[in-house]
Length: 229
Image (cartoon, rainbow, N blue to C red; front, side, top):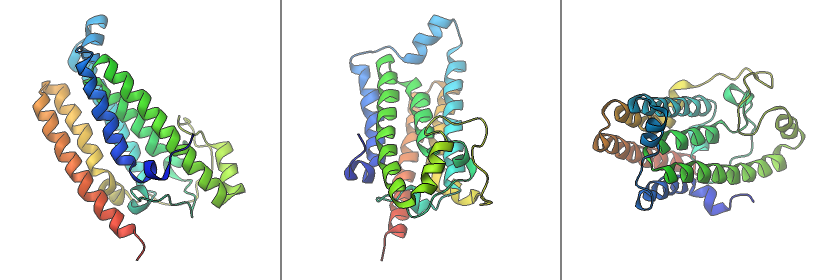
């Protein structure tokens, strides 16, 4: 079932609520997922949190790469923009690189949650991203017709192909714009890197809080810029 208008408009809020709910699972399961895994594997917990931080760094890069091919106002618009089909950069290997990055983020940040919280974060993120994807695909199919159908058949929906599946259109990445749009996302990566090095929860939360403030400010400005006059 595809996402509703409300879900699409407030998708960032829903993403935040998914993480909030996942971390609340400490109320019923007090064991940290990564600590349990480290004990089971006999591994260094810093190393495992470092791997989780790497996932979030990859997620931040993928989102930045994807956003560099889209106007930031499209990425954070309250309404779906389906007037044009972007099939360059990461879009040559996966149709929904932004949502793929969100799944990686859920897995990486889930390392700080309980065992139950980790599962909740990843599963809910997957379900919600698929609902958003189904909505976007239906509108792109309606607006782009055969062009989108050919693209859909060639390029995977959520799990990237190792090789590009369509030819490049020659569009160039606007990396500065991509970093502007996703600067807050890099804050999540920095927070998890800091936690992997120090295991200082307070430090990680301060960085995450600053990232969320940056997201709220930047997304509000971008939505206003993209709104029709």
